[in-house]
Amino acid sequence: MAKNLTKVALIYDFDGTLSTTDMQNYGLIPELGMKPKAFWKKANQWSIDNFADQVTGSMYYFTKVAKEKGVKLTKENFNRCGKNIEYFEGVETWFERINRFGAALDLEIEHYIISAGYEEIIAGSAIRKYFTDVFGCSYAYDEEGCPVWPARVVNYSTKTQYLSKINKGLGKLEDRAVNEFMPDDERPIPFTRMIYFGDGMTDIPSMRLVKERRGNAIAVYAPKGKHKRQAIKLLSDGRVNFALPADYRENKDIDKVVKTILDKIATERDLDELKAREEKKKLLVK
Image (cartoon, rainbow, N blue to C red; front, side):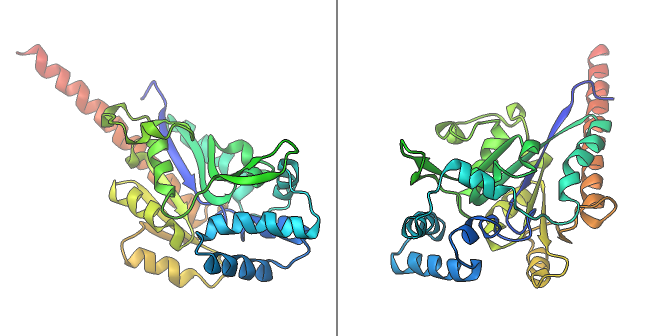
């Protein structure tokens, strides 16, 4: 019925939501000659000892350890580490499948990442091509191409600003415009047409924001993992609309739920258009 495609945003955390664990664990930390568990324990302790934000602290700690180990970090190095990422079942075919489903409903599906992981690693991943934009941590580099400073830091509290940027159709560097007034009917993707996927406590502010503004938030958990109870608690606490196993294959729970949400969005759009047409008729008798 609709001539113009209606935009819908599917927004994902990355680590533990699409990938089976932290993206740095697959290639970057092993390249430093360490086990992930040992690395994160030391990185987090460094942050505690130095009163640092944990995400910022770990970004510094990567560069510190690399220097000590004689490993030269570069964008190319980070990109290469992205090729080793392992995903939950169905992830690598999910995007094209859900795009086709949306297109049949005259919906234009846009996919976004908002993650405390590294943009440079995601850039080398097999699924990067499916995202309209990626909002993640990123480094600034010196003339030799080595990271020298955090250019952007994304943590649980800053994730929500990127939801506002998606809502307003802004790029990642358009910071001032986030707080400028924009009428709701001029915003490219209202919160009612957002679906947010996250796996843990760091996603709560974003999940809650999307749900409170009548979008949908989905807490996912590893099908064979230990965090099912945590996801269900987010559901019982009213933070999310759904708590589902992280299995993105066709006809699994996530697939069914998201397709039902998209059907609802398309139906409500069509109903609004019919109502608008009837409102125009009233003008003919005045």
